[in-house]
Structures are given as structure tokens and as C-alpha cells.
Length: 331
Image (cartoon, rainbow, N blue to C red):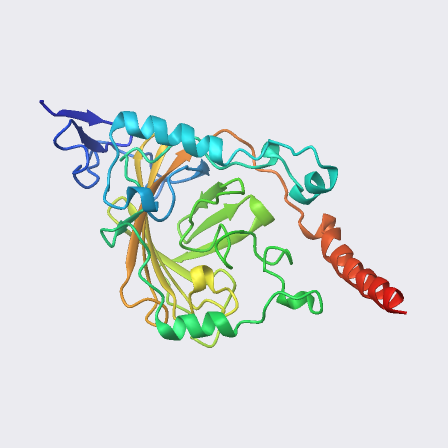
């Protein structure tokens, strides 16, 4: 059977055919595309973007030996993933319904896979998986305080409205690596000038400011989103981020987390995002992932987490009420 070379809008070439479907080449981008430019001549990356995708960060176990899908398999996988994350199926039990808190109207898990048809966002290691946590990282993770209704500071950062991401243990949608959320709307706004780039995310309105052609702050100065400096390599914006707080522990990382991001506009509606992550205190080897940001006309809205965060107070009050009820029952 002859193979068919299919070019997608992002400039990615994928070979389809019985003998090559699982052996597609790495991403290839159309170098003839000329991105719009600022007055300074630098590529214009500004606009509203979404990176919502059904492709997971790590390769699913049932696809362990399959790096790429065929086009038909991708359509079937997308349909299965969209159905799996549909949270709009409300149970008949009222108490269970309340516990679910939100239905599918509020979520944005994406409806399409990456155009390269990879089975994971991770491109290296070749198995599409995060490197195993080092023993020291496992011990650090185990030593973290366990969530307790006795102490609100043991709650997750997202529950406390400090950083807005769920399901990835710490971090923010704005902090690198900017992994698509399985739950939250992955919406961004990028603003540039000649000295800075602002990466703003809708969820909990986190804003990361990248200083161009700057130097990293002293290691004693640490922040929730890390310290980001950037420069251009041709038409690619390269952002280097260090100086994370230890309580961020994004994907169980430590204070020596180091992230290098590359943003390249590859067509009018697509940013190619490639990120390499290393942390000698967490993983024995670095890992690299890649996915697209797609232009959107969806407006970003304020997410005032603290303004409506009655749940924290109510959870603590509920725990105290349960304690009083238990004492009354014992009497």
C-alpha cells in the first residue's frame, strides 16, 4: 500500500498508510510562512490563544507501543476522549449531584488531538512518559503535609485560590510548562513590546512577565510563576524560567526546576509551543513536549476565585459541625 503524505495547517507532515502509520517522522514546519511583525521587526505573537487538547501529556497505557495514530484512529480517539471527559451526565442522587459542583458547561477539555497525531504531548523520552521520580523527589512528595480540615494551608494551591490549576499538583496555567488542563479553560492572551512579553491566562488571572534580553534574578528571590527571561532566535521566542518557589512543586518538581520554552508562529492561527523541562532533584533526565496554541476569538473573562470562594470557610465549618455532632452522639 502506498503511503500518503498529508500536510496539516500547522505545516506538520504525517505519513499515513498501513506500513508507516506508527512511524511518522518528527514535526516538520513550513519555513516559507512569514509571520506578522512588530515595528521592531520581531515576530508578532500577540492575540488570544487556546491550547485545549484531548491528547494527554503522557502516552496512555493502551497505546504504549504506538507513538502516532492514523488519521482514522485519531478521529476515533478524539470521540472517545471527548465522551470520557463529558461531565454533563448528572446523577439522580441530589447529594452526589451537589458534590460534582460543576457540569460540562463550565469545563473546556478540548475536542481535538494534536495535528501531528502523536499519542502524547511528550516527544522525549521516546516512550511518551515523564521520567520516573527520583527517590529524593518521592521522599519530598511524601513529606508534604497531607490535606487536612484541621489546617487550611494543607489544601491545594488551587483550592486556596493562590494558583489556578487542578490535576497536576501545584503550578498554574501560566507557569511553565503551560500544559493544557483536563478541566479548566486553557485560554491565554499574549501582549508584546520591545522589552517585555506578557503571558496572561484567564483562569485565576495569572500573568507571567518575560523580560527580554535580561538576566535572572538572584536565586534567593523566588516567585510562584518563576523568573522568566527571553530572547529571539530568528522568528522563535525562547523563554528561560528558573527561581520557582518550593511550594509550587509543579508535577512534583523542586526548587531547581528549569524550563525552556520556544514559541514559533507557524501559520496565521497556530503557535508551535515546544518546551524542555529539567530538574536534577526530581528527574534523572530532562523531558520535552510539544503542542499547538490555536488562535481564538473567545473573550477572556475575570475569574475572581477569592470573591466567591465560600467553600473554604464552609468546609472548615462543616468539619467543626461534624466534630460537635460526634461529641453529642458519644454523650
